[in-house]
Structures are given as C-alpha cells and as structure tokens.
Image 1: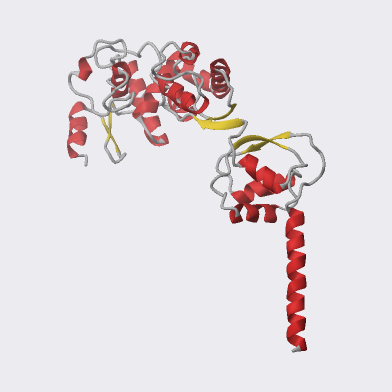
Image 2 (image 1 turned 180 degrees about the horizontal axis):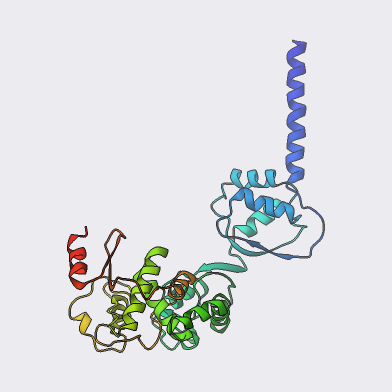
Length: 324
C-alpha cells in the first residue's frame, strides 16, 4: 500500500515538474520589446522554423514550440514570408503572428510566362492593379517582355508595380552575366537577340537537354536563313484564349499558322521583334552554349515529354507519325 502511494506521489511530482517546465518554455525569452524582421523561407517544416526562432533567441525551446504548434493543430497554418517578432512575445503570440498574413510574402514567377501572366499572378497576391483586364496598368506599362526574370521573390503587401519591375529587372541584369553575354555574341547574336531566342527556347523545350538541342536547331535555322517555324511564336501572336482561359493556345490549326503577325515565324524568317516570354537562366544558357553545327534541323516533343530530332523533313514527319 505504502509502495503504491509512493509511486503515485512520484508520478504527481514528475507531472507537476513537467507542466511547470512546459509552461516556462512557452513564456517570452525576455522583456525586450524591439521587434525584428524574421524571414520564414518557403518549404520550411515546423521543426526547422522552431529551430530558427530558437537560434534567433525569440523562443526558449524549439522542442516545446514545435510541439505546441502541433498540439494546437496549426502546423498547416504557419505561413512563409517576413514577420515582425520580438523577444517579449510568448510562444502563443508568436504562433498567432506566424499563422496570420505576413508583412512580406513570397511569390514565385515561373519561367516562360509572358508579362500579362506575371501581372495576373502579382495582382492576385498583392493587388498592384496589374490584371489582364487592365491593359493600361502600371505594371504592364513598365514591364519589358523577356527581361522580367522569373524567380521566387519576397515583397511587402503594399509593394508597387514600379518596385516589382525594378526588382525583376535588376535580377535579370544580375543573372545575365557578362560571361553569358559574351557567349551570346560569339553565336553571332546581339544581347537582345539572345534573349529573344531564349524566350522561344523556354516555350519550346522543358528539360535542360531539350533546351540545348532546340537552341542549337533554332540557331542553325537562323544561320542558314531558314524559317524558325516555332509554334510558341504563333501562340504569342494569337494572345489570350478565352475558351481555354490561357495565354497559350493548346492546339494550333492550319489557319492559326497563317496569322499575319511579325511574330509568325512560319511566315517570316528570322527572329520575332521582341521576346515572347520571360526566359529563365537555363534557357539563356542553352542559347549561349548552343551548337549551330548540329546535324539536326527539326525537333518534335510528344505528349509524354519525349523529344525526337531529325535531319530531314521526311524524318521529322516520320517521328511525328510514330510518336505515341
């Protein structure tokens, strides 16, 4: 009997100690009220976020903090972005802030978008008045097709179109290094022509290997004064497709290939007047490293993403006919 009482007493004492420890670990680190900006990267787990906050001395225990979030059922509510936190905040206060809208939000602008698509994405998240229906919006007036570098950015909620354009353009200038520009010039292209070709490659190929092959074929076509015959340029010329709710028409018809536009590379030889999308670094690099002496003149990508290359039109037609 005494043994049972002793065991129960020990359990009670341990429980009280654990509760006391748990409560102490969720208290504020200090009385310092100075807020600091904390950036939570996209894709970070709750444990990684807790470890970051502990290292920045904003919480007492990463273990207690991460378990507190899980117990509250808020693991999926924690946002990525930039938040204002201070050491005098309790764990509960910090969790509430991390579960709310951040002061600055991440946005990913993928490769191959045209400026109108970027505008829609930006408008949906930051409301900078840059939607497709507002053709005279500031973003569309300031943005330059091909030079809005696709990447993941962190912007404040009140960001302006001018600030976004500057950031994207500055990133482009940083990524389009002098080394890449020099290689582009060795291909016989100007800096701008390199970006025009890269914008086509971005829409015509989906893997690094395919980008290099397509860039080589298109460059060879340019060198021998052959039409580029790139479907993506037709899609760009056609513009927004209301029925598909897309800026890129999925299935082109024979009539589409006859559209009168300087972007129709079936009708007009050479490069279109401007880029048709905003290419990523991989496509720009593919142009820089393209081999215009490639034996191939034709390429075809099937619905499964497989690529086929041909030296003659007859071989190309055969590839199309045999593809799944």
